Image 1 (cartoon, rainbow, N blue to C red):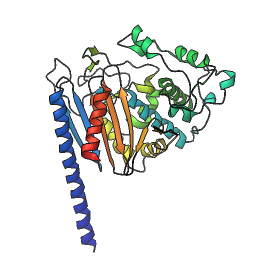
Image 2: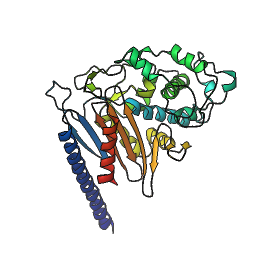
Image 3: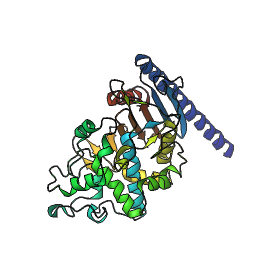
Image 4: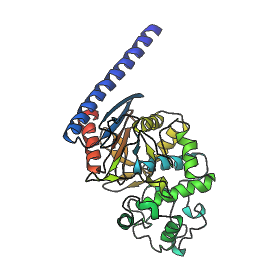
Length: 352
């Protein structure tokens, strides 16, 4: 009986590995066709299936480079940073540093003074599920002021003035995507841990997972891709500033698959926190939201995903906890339609 069990276990492992290899070949073929049709756009993809990792990449680090993009090439993860921030918030909940339905009033820096009629109305959960009703940054104006580094003009004074001068939450309880919300979550983390967001991120995610190519303030390294706007003009990587918790981390396919592996595995702080972020905290007829996560369900699957768009690159991360797979997609051009279509095609033609 014992030998039979061992044989069955080996057969299951072999079957799972073969299944993963088959999927990876199909993904590679699909991405290769995309690249042949869009040879100016570099792409890097990581895929994890039952703890087995697979990677494919096409293109060069930049227009003039002979160096091929690979799983270690650095991209801007942009708003995928919000998943890291929401995981840190969930870890703080598990550690009893905060409660998810606490009001933000008691956690924000002293510079923030909410209008009298808004006091003790907005909860941490509202920020993390994009339903706080607070005003957001005017990105069109910021881009006009500095098209290469638009958030360089955003300071703590900018944010505190924006929040303090708000006297009505016009769409409180309704979904409206918010950079300010996740920036405030970063500041709440700094208050409860008495450390910088950068330090907290390193201590609780980057260092434990040995994500040595996940970068914050210093990203001047050789294996960095270029960013390109939609007309292929060179776009600088966004520099670290107060809005970092909403979208300024840099990483690569290898490190983000390491993160996904931790999320999908059980009995580690990151996975336990991820499970909390996967609960539905907002729902209307068209959308379900966890903490920073979009949740898509059908009869057979529940997908958790987040896209990211910097000024010069696009990315998307997606995973299925039940079927134990996850994927990260990076492209070196701001083109959310392309990154979304890549995910849709991979999911519909290969994974579903």
